[in-house]
Image (cartoon, rainbow, N blue to C red):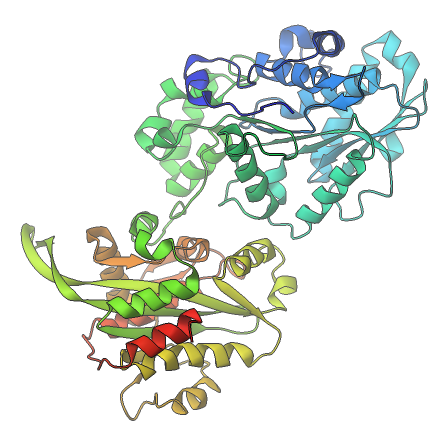
Length: 587
């Protein structure tokens, strides 16, 4: 088993060295593969140069690793997967077409199959045309391979093998014997709920042969990574960083052209063209600073949204929280406001800890129809007053405030997974993490919500429940059964639209000065990142970045809770031990 980690990747990138670690490659196989690859010609470039001169060294290193990891004497392959993250314009599709053709030329298994899988028909067609063009530039290859344009298949006349170009689909495999599969632009499939299943099918087909290898090439996503793309990227990073050294896992070689975290999170550094060569392995070939810099300057004039999309595609900057146009100002402080004392706990224990340390807890609720989420935020106020610096009337002064802590959860009907398939992978992730409950019974979410509120109420910590008055339905009756009503002041309607402006502003100020912390979680990171602030003639209001898929209900439940907490509610305190025991399952 080879160690495929690359612990010195930061130094390698800074020095312009290969990201392929020092490996005991089979030099004969690696040389043979490179010799064939280098002789191929780019059919759509003036002069039709050979890849020996046209291809970047980064991809030649990849080619050597693919073929040099095969030991024909023992029929063993020491690298089964390769995950290559390279920016837009790196000629990944053209080079990959050459790699696939090389694999077919070296293949000795009769009637085998190789697949080039693209996320769209356009990507698939591009790969096919490049491969056919390379064949047509060589008399020897023309004798051996026969393209069949109507079915996007290239036949190997010497042994009956085929290279098929396909668009990503759940039924992509039909029991084929695969020797090679190349999946291009995985980031475009992050929203596809079936991606993980299809990858499993592909790997299963490759595992039928000892020489089978999967190559994934992609740029960074222009939205927050999700689904299978997020999973594969996380695994590749962990392998690169040596997290699994000594453990038996699928041998995967990571080639990740992304900035070290210190640069990636500092716009002043990653936006400096002096640093760009670190993540542009094909610079000087298919990409040039002379065109990239003016393009970058143009995108900056269009606003933050255009900047972030450009950066994600050309510099592999990962889109995180608050990188959307007209985003809520508090979003830039959100992730940093995660309280490690809460975030390291399970969701259940985090709520128990929040209630325990609070003198008063209010609950904010916000829900929509069956295609929306139902959000709940428990917002606790700590008893101790902390010294904080604030700005008032242009002057800085000290003030004493009580810190607030937020814990959020959401529910959704299972039908949302079908109605909103583009976000289904996210929702399943959040469900697995305990941040979201997917319900089959339309009333089961109401039962869980009321139970959580009742547990806080039973210990005398409840300062009230703040709700969006629209669409409450049966929730009002359910809350009345636990003594939470409008009449006793525990159930209040939170102003919506521009009436929520105070809660929005209060939240962002408290996040900035550290007086609002939260229990972390990817779901709330996503929801607050979906917030869009729209100015009106006299105020602002919160809405979502795009209709349908950009859910914000849990974030709105936070604002509802802040509305009530800003009124400084008072709650009694008793019975805390019983509550903690019930919530943690100790009793």
